[in-house]
Image 1 (cartoon, rainbow, N blue to C red):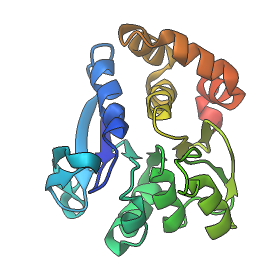
Image 2: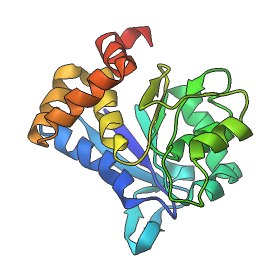
Image 3: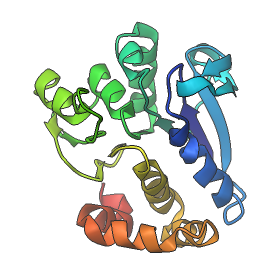
Image 4: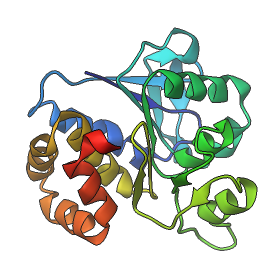
Amino acid sequence: MLFGIFIYDGVEPIDLATFGVLSMARRIAPEIEICTIAPRAGAVALANGLQVTADFGIGEAPACDLVIVTGGPGWSAQAGATETLDYIRRVHASGRIASVCTGGMILAASGILDGGPATTKREVVPPETSPLEVMRASYPRIEARAAMLVDRGAVVTGGGVSLCIDTTLHLLAALLGLHVADETARIMEYQRAWKANREGFPLIQSAIEKPDEG
């Protein structure tokens, strides 16, 4: 099962916890494969100086079972990038896609969230504007929710920053079973937070228990 992590200049390094969770999950489910995808293959400058290397550019990206779109200050440039938005639409048309943090704003700009609920990062440092409020104001066809996670089946949007961990665990549960997510949380020593967040947001729990119902 191939997971793609979509990155770009200006992604917050913490959003690469999506890759980290999947890396740990491979100890439980070795069939997991992971790749990084960016507008162009090669060096990607994350926020605050960290550089990573994208395995593939949009043009040569492989078909993935799931693509996770990360967030960070660079989201606004990607939300206006025609090639990125076309790629998001292609992924959505052919399979599952998810976002963490302000990656949800890129999904919003592509139009794939129209007509249903979604979430994104809420908390900011003044005088920044909450991305969730930007979503409400800029994309009226989306039901923007102040939620940890919104699961619409083929599209999952996660909340801000550290919730990328819980979103990735949720996706593992939906695709490979709750036992894979629980065991991954355990070996990460994250099981207490995982349990608390699931209990604090019932939609996560119900979606994991009934993944086929979307």
